[in-house]
Length: 336
Image (tube, rainbow, N blue to C red; front, top):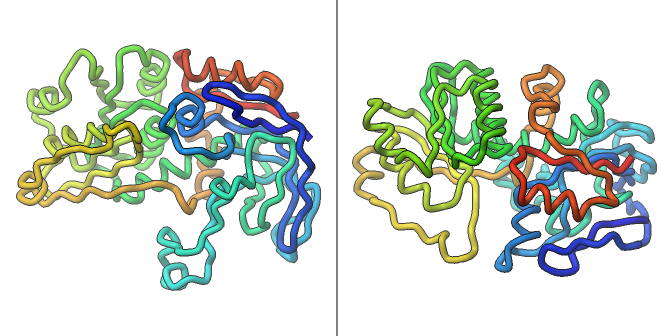
């Protein structure tokens, strides 16, 4: 079968590998669609990036079942959870699966990628019916946005700011608007024309172009008292977030850097006297697939809004190059 493998920096190839055989408790899924994640692009383009196979926002059809799982049968359309909590460690048993100590991390175990078939634990797939395969592939990034909103305790009536107009930030904005927050502010660079257009369609109240306007000055001039700041941007933006978040507010952060810029100096007096909370967040394990699928079914997250480019598996090199260099929102790889 065909599989995408990175052979050198910014170089992908389709290679032939053996079709996986399901072990006890596993299913084999024929992959039909998958989205390119920002982490995929980071690995593809950065020398200092960590290394794993590319492609984890994937959906497909169950073609073999070597499990006793009653919720899955051959022929089911499923989305694959790349990091599943174990269900039996003390945190899972205490109702805190987000802190699982023994999760199934299929991504780091290199069990999944852009390839024709994968063998994964039955507990790591979620069936769906109403959506297309490519629509359901938006569920994985949406779980990341939902995790961020949950961690920040975003609620109706709040004023929030989102740093970064990527797919995660825009999905968070769409769900926040659906929840009924009072106002949403979004930051990004001025070249993000298509992303800003979607933000306005979603209902974002104001956009700050960070290469033309200082975020802190904007908030001071507007007299903003932000209840929540959600960061989907590089680590250095934490400094601004500390300055603009109100007394008792919460900052959530998802992102990483490995080139030295991850080392950030913060004013801890501000954090202390303003009673701020800074909470790291990422969807490992993923907790919100059922909710994510339902939000897509209900058109809160619309495929046509987020996915501007589709490519076949054979064109994966071009897909990554264009996703890296062109102004887009989300790129989808189709295998059917």
